[in-house]
Image 1: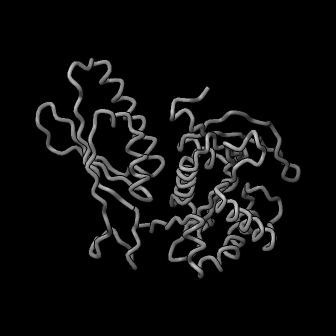
Image 2: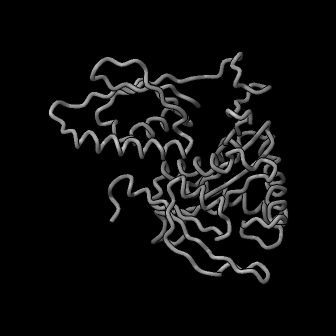
Length: 293
């Protein structure tokens, strides 16, 4: 869902120029993070009166609650008031594809990203989910994708895995996201909360998989960003993941979404006679709240 936000900033009297410069720098850095996460789409500066700070922003969020979380995370919010206008598609919008699905600036249809509840509440999608996911995972593993399998998983193995993830999501211990174009599954991803009692505040982003035919259209980024939002909402403190060292595109994506490397095991992953580094990444939500030790 998209929102047009009019952001009006009023700097308190007596604020030093250094304080203004500092918060502006932090605002710019946060704007880049929100853009990378897919929440901040555009910014405009309308005609202004002397001394006036006003910006128009186009934001994307699942709902008004998530939008408020996004806006509240911006440093200038302490001096700013926001006027929010929810937007809905217009039937004559030239940016709409055939059947009214939104497109990117390059003409590519944008995926519909569903969570576990939305997926399982659609009987048709739910009935086809395991089979469609199995095909995507099998094709990717056969092509050498680093998804944790050396040989393609069986249909039964994938079905049991997804049943476990959906069950955990219903219990608040996981999040599942599925990407659809024209009601066809083109990608999926999930995280699971750690089972060990002392690690329960944290979760591991275990898989992000996108149909090879849909690569290059931002689906992996959209899935990952949605799962990050789910983790933040669930109160997860640290979201971890590991990736194979030769998977440069994935590593770049994770860094752009705020993950940082905290460890690396050289030549740890064995695929036949080949050896690859196991790269360990983390996203620490406690730092956003200023309570990390």
